Image (cartoon, rainbow, N blue to C red; front, side, top):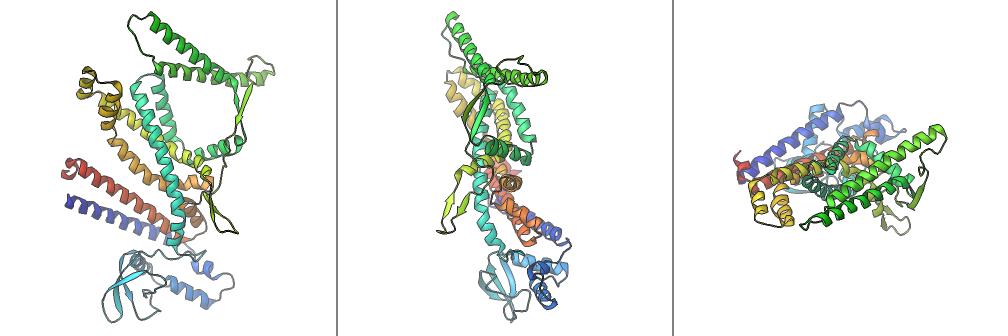
Length: 440
C-alpha cells in the first residue's frame, strides 16, 4: 500500500510540473511589458529598467522559467550575499528555514512557495488567493451539498419508479442540467430570482388549478381501489405524485396556449389565463459579495442570503450527474441476488432500499462528488462573474482582463493543485477499500 501511495504522489507531482510548465509559457509568450504597468506613465527609462530587472524580464525565457520553478519549489537555492542577484534570499519575499550552505554565496532553504506579486496592486499573489479562496470554497461546498442531497434523493425515487412518467422526467431534467451552460443558467437565475421575483411573485392560477385536479383525482382512484380490493393495500403515493405533476404540466401547457391564443385574437377564448396569485418574493439579490466591511467599524457583515442563487446555479450540473449515477447504480444493485433474497425473506422495503441497496450503490456517486467538488472550484469562474462573487474565479477573470499575469498564473496553479490533490485522495481511498485497485 505504501508503494501505491508513493506512486500516486509521484504521478501527481508530474501532473503539477506539466501544468506549471504549460501555464508559464502560455502566459509569458504574450506580448506586453509589465514594467509599464508598474512604473506608470511618468516612469523614466532607468525606473523601467530597474523594474524589468526586479521581475527578471531582462533574462532569456528559459532562465526566467528556471527562476519561476525555484520560487515555486519548497526546497530552493538562493544567493545569500548579493541583493542584485535574481535569486537573492530576500526576507521580504520568502518565509524560509535555512537547510545548509551550497557554497560561499549559495544556500539551500525550505520555504513556502512564492507566487510573486501582482502587477496592478503590488500585493503578494498568495495574499490575494488567501482573501478570495474562502468565498469560493463556501460556494463550492454549498453547491455540492445541495447537489448531493437532492441528486441522491431524486435518483433513488427515479430508480424505484423505473419506466414511469417521473422516471422519464428525471432523465429529461438530467440531460438539460448537464447541457445547460453555467453562464446562461446564472443569468436566468439571477434575473428571475434576484430581479423579476425579488419583491413579489406573480404565478398563474390555471396550472395550480389543474395540479389540484390531478391530486384529487389520484386520491379518489387510490381510495376506490382500496375499497374494492379484498386485500388491504397501501396508498400508492408515487401514483399520486405522478398524476399531480401531470396535472400541473397539463395546466402549464393550457396556460401557455391560452396566452398565445388570447394574445393573437384579442378575445378571452380560454378563461382563467389572466388570473394570477401574488406570493411573497424571494427577497434575494442578483449580485453581491458574501462579506462586506463597514467603513467605520471595520467589522465584516455577512450576507448569507446572497449564497442561495449562485449555489443553486453552480449545483445544477453536478445535481444532474449525481441523480443519473444514483439511478443507474440503484437499478444495477436492485437486480442482484442478495436484494431479491432479502425481499423474499420479508425484509421491510425501507431496510432493503437504504441498507442493502443504496449503501452499495453509492461508490460511483462518491467518486463523482469528489471529482465535481474540484471541478466546482474551477467552474465557479463563470458563476462568480455573473453574480459578482468575490472569489478566485472572479479574481482570475479580472487578472486576465487586466493582464495581471502573476495573479492569473497563481490562481490557475492553485486550481490545478486542488484537482490533483483530490484525485490522489480518491485513488488512495479506493486503494484502501478495494485491493484490486492496488494490484492493477
